[in-house]
Amino acid sequence: MIVTAVLTTGIVRVASGLEQSQQLIDEVLRTNHAKWETTMFVGDAEFRSTKEGPQPDHQLRISVIPSAGLAALNYMDHDDPEMVIANSYNPARPLPEVSLLFNGETGAVFPRTASIPIADARTAMIEWIQTRKRPKCIQWRPYDNY
Image 1 (cartoon, helix red, strand yellow):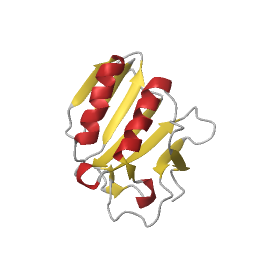
Image 2 (spheres, rainbow, N blue to C red; image 1 turned 30 degrees about the horizontal axis):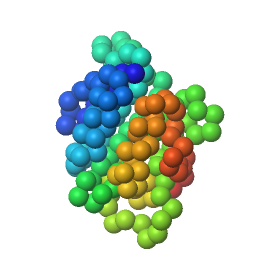
Image 3 (cartoon, rainbow, N blue to C red; image 1 turned 135 degrees about the vertical axis):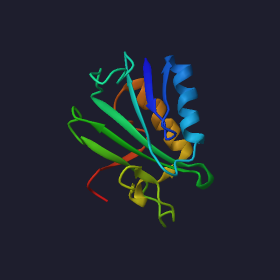
Image 4 (spheres, one colour; image 1 turned 30 degrees about the vertical axis):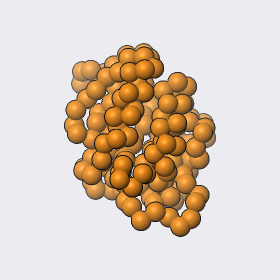
């Protein structure tokens, strides 16, 4: 397994195998995402090593505010028959008073319902790298359903 991550810092990191991938996940979850999200890809090759590719068929977008203990995930997979684009979902109320960045280029933020505890995000990210599918250990909502 090879995990490619475009970090919030603008640096691209590549991890090979479960141990390195878990270390990369932990690095992502420790980093404050104030200006940009992190985008990750998993597969058998390093993704986007050139402009021509290889191109991933799915991705996981992550935003974290470690001081708040919260993260939000966005999963996109064009082959997913249930939800092509989905956000993590937290049914707990009241909603947290934080805005997690969805897109640094536009300034868009995740819906507050997408905010989940960092520990849950870590569990979901590890499931994702192992299964290469939308994790089932957390709840999801379609991207356009707040």
